[in-house]
Length: 322
Image (cartoon, rainbow, N blue to C red; front, side, top):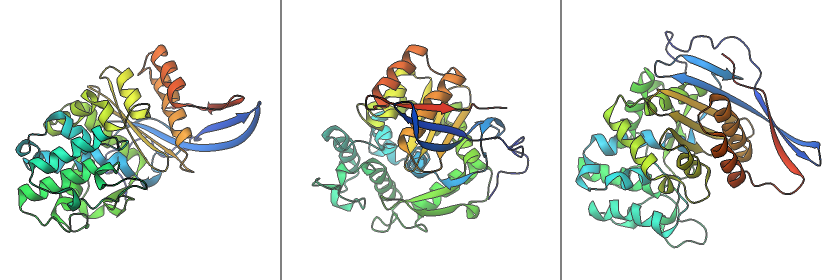
């Protein structure tokens, strides 16, 4: 699967990936290879490091786009969830009572039960509402209820709600929906295998403020960053310090996506070995290079999320190039 032939110019020249080196007492202990790309809303690759066409699963960074049917069907309006409900539908949250309560509100207003959620019950928890994807699942169910679609099979790839997600994503990418490759994510819902440049293109659309539903989603996430992840979590703390200018959503296995609001620019990051610490270090490195966050904000964020033991440091080598 590739970007449309008219898009993605400049992606054929080989560029080295970024390297994140973990040093202990000045000696290199581990090295992570990282690919990153910046796209505009037209899909043009503006800057990159490594392979822009690197293919991998977008994982939970897909969530803002999985929320599109929730809005377009009228389900979000029907359950009167407001921006908080939209934010939790895009969240990989911490499972706190506050997070669970927002997911429950969607179900309650849609006259659904928590036991209809098909995300797992986390270890040590008592309800699927505490799962980090419960908001997404609640939005799926509310959409099914509004559209009179089956609620017991909502995670199957051929279910109407999942087909609608694929249709909307394919539309944003300029691809036929049947070209998308899906696989089961850890919460049971489908996720998509995409090129890194395609992920960046999706986030360029998310930040462009030219499509009403995407603008509503980005506004909700930025208004309630604490619901998108949680206190001390990277996405939450970054959006707080960006003062409404940068949207952030990560995914498992080294996926991190960013969007510059109003500029129509998207960034996608993939760490080959899936390291969380490496993706966060690279995100901070690129935010500094792109000048998307103030120096003081970057310093505060680094101190809060890159928690390393004494004598241990992370160094990012390389830069985005056009």
